Length: 331
Ligand SMILES: C[S@@+](CC[C@H](N)C(=O)[O-])C[C@H]1O[C@@H](n2cnc3c(N)ncnc32)[C@H](O)[C@@H]1O
Image (cartoon, rainbow, N blue to C red; front, side, top):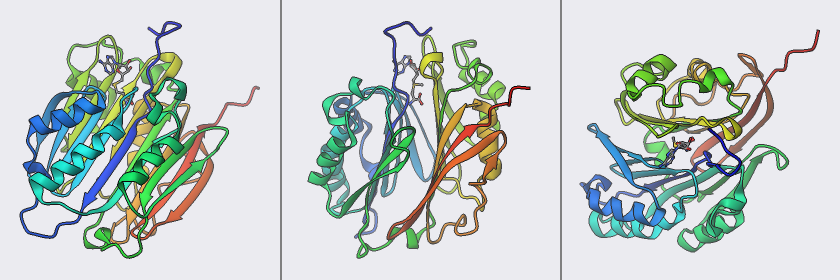
């Protein structure tokens, strides 16, 4: 499957923008699909399919996912897409079509790329990405968590103590698990062994990660799997799988509310069977996961924690951890 010159960068660029509502009825969902298509054209990806429920619209993309709710916009794109290109038009549409003039919070994050030299200029280094964000947003701060000589994770976020603290108004949390070195057993389902993504979701265990999830998924040719899931009360999840052995990668993201994510994390690891993973959790002051969460144990299944870092922002707590599979000792 993986030839010498075939490479796909699974690690996603992830953007989450919250707008400040100043009048009733302001709603990003009023932006038409054709307008989103124009935004995505600048990023160089397309909409594959859409699902919706009463609180959000989920777009499955040729390179990952987009979620639109009343005042929150999430765009996650992989490969060599130009995510930052989405920002000017998205901000303009939010202003013109919905009357949103103020960005309340922004989060831009990504893991370090496997092959940064293959990215377009604007995404070749985090420093370049931050220069672009600084031109668009005020009060932003840029961080790098993890190992400079291994897996690390970059974050740019607004950290304005004077902001109106959206997190305090409504509970919010985001868990991300970014998995590398997937074992052959964990990869074998995602080359196109079935033409039916629902069958793959069922056999792999994806369909059972969170009961009651409305799933929209897609199998790429000749391999690759993407999934958006919607749950009640504004909850979502997404999964993206790059199964090629030489650069295998899978990601899981959700904002589903839980007191602890320990069981969900074990279920996810059991589906994808990575060799190592990075896990991050954002939680605001009213989230039920704060403060006593048991998600980041020293050991999770066969994995040993390598690093643990925590940050406190004006509205959110962030925990970052790196885990690696415990290697069996030679007998
Ligand atoms: C599922 S997509 C989404 C990638 C995602 N960010 C991830 O975590 O891997 C990537 C996988 O689909 C494969 N693929 C096949 N055709 C593709 C296409 N037209 N666009 C994007 N990926 C494609 C890639 O080789 C890769 O294995």
